Image (cartoon, rainbow, N blue to C red; front, side):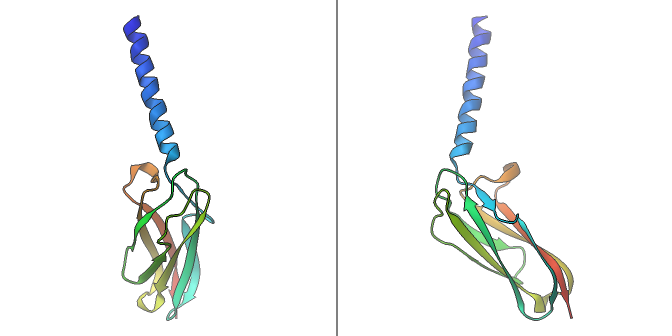
Length: 132
């Protein structure tokens, strides 16, 4: 009986430690969601959108790199750490002159933030349709 109680206590302690460790890390919370839909955009100019996010974690959020899925997307982001509760920005520009028709672009964020589903990087999305 003592072994059973000790085993259950160890499992509970380990579970509690994991939960508290995850709660303290930096976290993205994107205003308006993780996907932006441009709708129909005229082919030619750069279509730009700025993702605004809040660090809802308890540690500073540090973005190491932001990489688009194709060279048709330019990227700018806040290089300084985003403190807990503060707002940061990632600006993306899609070169519509290089696109024809419907597009769906992924942008990968490497940071110290919690990533959903155990992925190695956070992903945000752009979509729309380039028309003449």
